[in-house]
Length: 278
Image 1 (cartoon, rainbow, N blue to C red):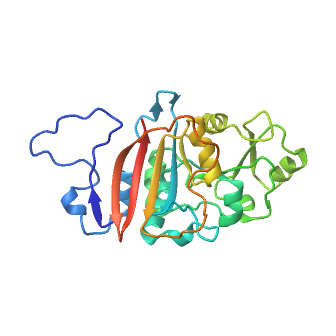
Image 2: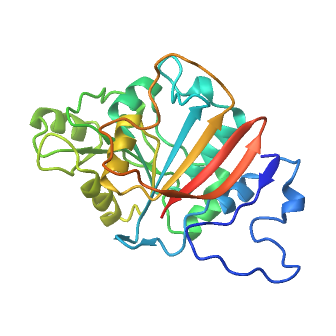
Image 3: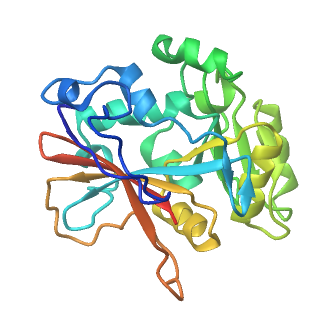
């Protein structure tokens, strides 16, 4: 990051600033303008709230990380990498470095070629101090379990991969997942996963710092179920036209849900925003 646009977190009551008070954060604002932030500074800026408590979901926090073009496309030619940037990938890595678990849809796993999360030295001390595993677990949401269980995501992760599915999932595919080393978690009474049960099941395992990277259909389900606490959205200074998916997909909500702006960063025209559910 090379520029910082400080904003007041609108999710909490505003307090009158003390005269001449220095801004809180990883460093003073004047020091952060026009230079690249360190990973440690990014980790401080994107730290999960303490305590991890919301009015309707104590002791867990679900944030999403997505990228969109100016005209609303979440992908180009089926993948998000084409609309990303180096700075976006640094934030992507930082958010993973802070999370206990990364929740992702099966289609995104297939399209993006997901691999296991890796341990990174930059976050090792922070994770150890918080009692976290060396790397986040990947939790794949799939009703059909139509997944290639021979991939490294399942056969050689640093932390065992989780598979979230419904009670009606094929017993044969459940056995295949288990043989590959994945842990299968039933989070729905039918063929699919119920979002509230999914995040609760993960929290019950101690995976309370939750991150989802989509895809759009999964994020739409989380949003519609009211379990999404925070959205980290990168706005890319690009136009793609076409009919690419938005960052969420699914039925229209009866009433739009309001989020409040918590932070904005900028580099090379890319805006890195953070919104919290009110």
